[in-house]
Image (cartoon, rainbow, N blue to C red; front, top):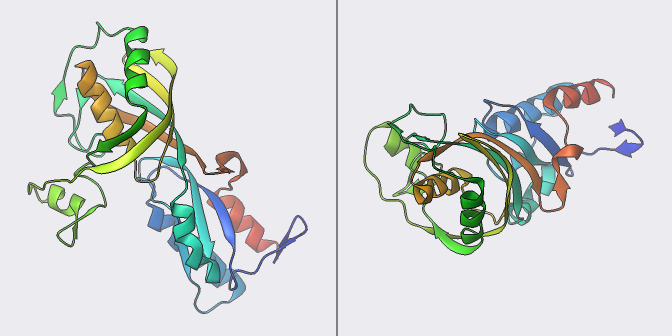
Length: 234
């Protein structure tokens, strides 16, 4: 397959950058890519995998590998991630985002821009972070979100993560937008929860876009629709 002078070989392995649509799971993207390739090219079986989960309510960069290159997925998973996150102060949810209903409302009118900027400095560096119960983390052989959706209590063990960069981009209360560079395994929803807790206002993640994975940037990613057109032009 050729595109802009490049030859593609999905069986031997391709490295693809996608912009995940809102509402899609990471496995939805993998399944769609596999289906498009196998149907268009008449390939019977094809290994396709992704190098880092994005929550359904998040959008942005996903690395997808095909064929023999799937063996290198773990290398890509270890890369640092960059996000643009918008959080809303004064409200909380059990999932720390909009997957679940609001379970608390708090005053946020006293929070200043300077207070937020000072607090963000404290969240930089290596630290222990407790993942959300509504997450794909395994607990006793089962995904944590399975326990949460059944109303069962589960203890989440902290993980060691690192925040390299945490900058305030926009301040329009109750909305706050952040630029975040972090290590693998960092849950932005948990970071938002912890920021809200430290401010005394509560907070939930309203919007999340992954803009980079290591040196790979969202601006170089393609949509599923564009990929479909590329395949049709073989």
